[in-house]
Image 1 (cartoon, one colour):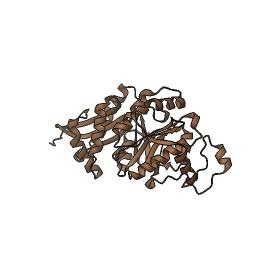
Image 2 (image 1 turned 45 degrees about the vertical axis):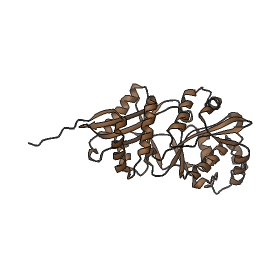
Image 3 (image 1 turned 90 degrees about the vertical axis):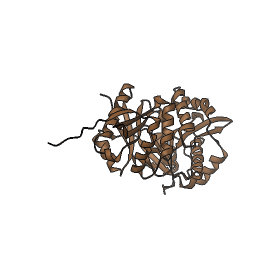
Image 4 (image 1 turned 30 degrees about the vertical axis):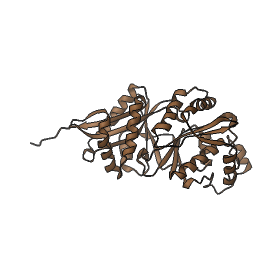
Length: 338
């Protein structure tokens, strides 16, 4: 008679003493060690447990899988919460036996208990094993747009990929004033008309003020969390504020973490970009992006990306006009609403 081995897998919260095992599993899968990335993510989860969900799959006292997720709420005007899966992995000798499904079940139960209606993640278009796993677990393509732009050593050239000139009629038809997109004029305006500074924690009230003017909602808690994340959780601080008439009139919250989404190149992620309505036609957004690209080029960050809601055509148009293009990453979602 054949003897069938019965596996007993338990799922619990990830702990600090799981770090070595997680790093080892990830390093074998990715071909490089991302210890600093996982250290920062674990520290962030311990500091803000309500915003992070991290589970470990355990068999015979050993860690055989893990998942790291975080709560999304408010990015670019988003109203509903979502749980974003940023990293998931299984030990090489535990693949194909449902470890990922067990971890996903734990995430779904956690999200439902906290009235979070969906899970979100993203994957490269050619990551076939991940795409199959997402398909097998009922994920579907999300409507969000992931766009990115090569930093190119810090050289910021709006509409550099568009060989056709922008006509006066086309310019007048746009909802926001892009102005003349030629780089020389842009660089002059970005440097001379707006003062750009590194964001500091004491800029919170000004950022909340601008966000309220844009959205009509007081999102101090959300903005405070994103500001703390940009200042504390990011491997490199690159968030900026724009000043005119001696006040802050715009802001850009971004973070750089070489380990995000398993990428092999250093990537900056823009979380939030805002300009006070009174300064919408003063090219403040261009100035913020210009300085961001200069800073990222000096840091040898190769690419910057962001996610835009499908209804935010104005923001998407602005980003496309300044050199962004569709990313090679595909956004996915899993609805938890019965």
